[in-house]
Length: 307
Image (cartoon, rainbow, N blue to C red; front, side, top):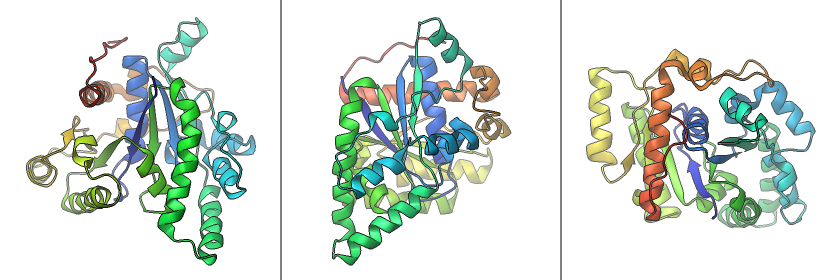
């Protein structure tokens, strides 16, 4: 069975896209025993840094791991060879690590990390090919083929592949959007984010996937329980994105920020220690996403492996 490829995406920055990616990966791995691969397509490398730390991020880059090197293969007109580019251990949860040590693995997180150098490599590629007359849409199409071929070899090894896409429409971002089968859209409950989210989903519907609404899982993040935010939440659910599936609303919390700050590459934390009061929100996020995927695929809803 091949993995579900999901793009976590929004053109509006600052909406918790990378945080949602990591929370969803942890929730799926911990509560459902899923084998999750994160593909970080964003040169800001936020989800990579959250899981690997800055030291681990630099080590991975020097070891030839990550999306940057996959893009270099494309630039050199080489077939994609992705297996050696994946960092197989991006687990931060103690329970998953201990289960692995006992040879009783029940859930895991791996990553194809990003690096800030990725943007420079992408820009160099764009300048070279645009100078030869290639259109941005054509480059995006070629990159989509390259990424799709690469992930095809890994898909049987994972249950879910999460693409953390950048908050702009570069050819690489467009390639990631085009190879996904489902889309997670994090957004804030405020007027600017609503407008940006609507513009983004309208563009994806027009340019990438006409039936986006049925493939779209929306998560309201960093929610402040004020009258203004509650009204904005209602507008999102009942007016602007009324035809989408909504996951749980994630409250604004200092715990969410600290949860994403891994002390060291060799440090681990329990699910409760990492997420604190947000543990229940992580569980609900994973549960609602699993239900969404099962409904789309017409399959039975899997049972959790941990409570």
